[in-house]
Image (cartoon, rainbow, N blue to C red):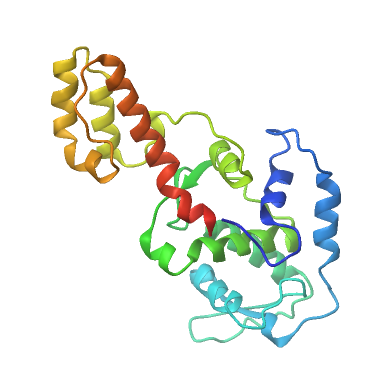
Length: 246
C-alpha cells in the first residue's frame, strides 16, 4: 500500500511522520525536501482543477485524482462548489487549497477503509475498496496532503505505521480484533481454564475460525493459546496484506 507517483515512495513519507517510533537510516528531512521540491507551484494544468463539494470531499477528490493527466507535482486549483456545481467565487491563491487539504484528510480519516479509535486507526478490510483500488487512491491523497499542505495522517496507529513501513509488528492482541463478535469468541476461548472448555468455545466460534483457517481441536491449554494468537494475528495482520500492497 501507499506507492505513489513521486520518485520517493509514500512509505518514506510515513517514516517522516514516524520519527518518534523508529531510528531511520535515511535523512528524512532531505526526503521531504526532495518531494516538496518536485512540486511546481507556477504550473497548474486544467487537469488539476478540483471542484469540491464540502458534503462529499472524498468522492470529488476521487474524480480528480483518477483523471488521466492529473499531475501531483503541479499546483492544485481548488474551487468549492454547491450541490448544483456553482462555485463559491473565491480565486484559489492558496487559501482554498489549504482548506481543501484539511477537509480531505478529515474525509480520509472517516472513510470506511479505517477502523478503531479516532486517534489510533487501523486499516479495515473492505472487498469493494479492494476491487476499486480505493486503498491506493487514498494513499495518493494522503501523500498529496503531506507534500502540498503539510497535513499529516495523525490518526495512524503504531501498528499501521509498522505495517506501512515494512517493519515487523509485535504479536497482535485479542483487543485489536475489530469485529466485536469474533473478538468476544476469542476472549471466551482465551479465558477457558480447561481443555474441555476451550474446545467447547472453539466449537461455538467454528464458522469464524474456519473462514480464516484456524479451526482445530486442541489437546492442551498451550495449543488453545496458540490458536487464539494465530487467529488474532491473521485478523489484524494477515488478512490486510492485499490492502497494504495497494
